[in-house]
Image 1 (cartoon, one colour):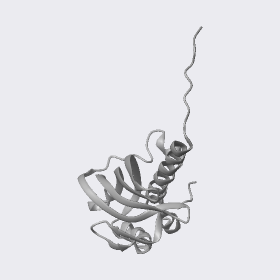
Image 2 (spheres, helix red, strand yellow; image 1 turned 180 degrees about the vertical axis):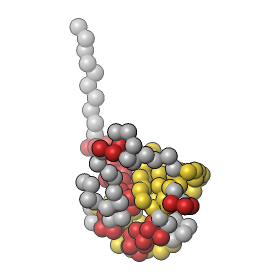
Image 3 (cartoon, one colour; image 1 turned 90 degrees about the vertical axis):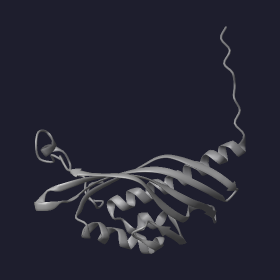
Length: 175
């Protein structure tokens, strides 16, 4: 007869998994908020006094949340998709973690002569994340650019079967 091994998981292990997921959810909310230019969603990933250093912007997370949409508009961004990949979450104590997460960002932006430029950006978020009043959020973020690629876009939104698909938008109207 086949005997299945039983595995018990401690309450501490379950809490660690819950904390990791709450932290990862912060990372996802921020990326989606940037793509959708959703100030409230971006702000929900950060504590009220959080700071952000993105190179082209350094300041409060709240100011970043209101800055990024107009910044994208000024650079002709018509579509952006942030992908948060693996995240190394290292707990410093019960309420603090250092998080390094890899990201890929895909952007279609206005190019020369009405064309689109496809921008692909690889980098990392270096975050200090804290639990305050029971909620995990980013307290400090530094973005590190690892590489980028800019090429003429080959996006075909109207050809083939693409013309029949719902269009992704930079707001929440396609939810």
